[in-house]
Length: 82
Image (cartoon, one colour):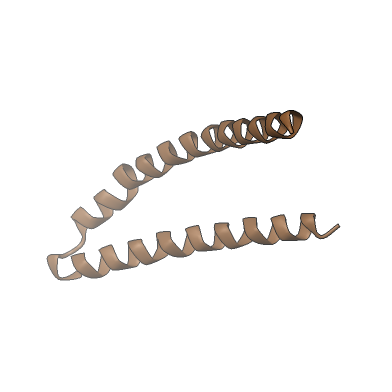
């Protein structure tokens, strides 16, 4: 039982490290994109289009994240079938 707990603990640490190595740069890129692309685009739009632009940006971000999550789930299920 001790070796299975050790194996589980090592896998958790590995997943945590990989998540940090991928998530931190991705978060920085998203923040830079927000400040250098989205906010200037919102400042140049007319006030009447401001709510529409916010909704479209939120829907686009949600769609991209949903597609990424579905691709990861699909790849995981495909690899675990064998």
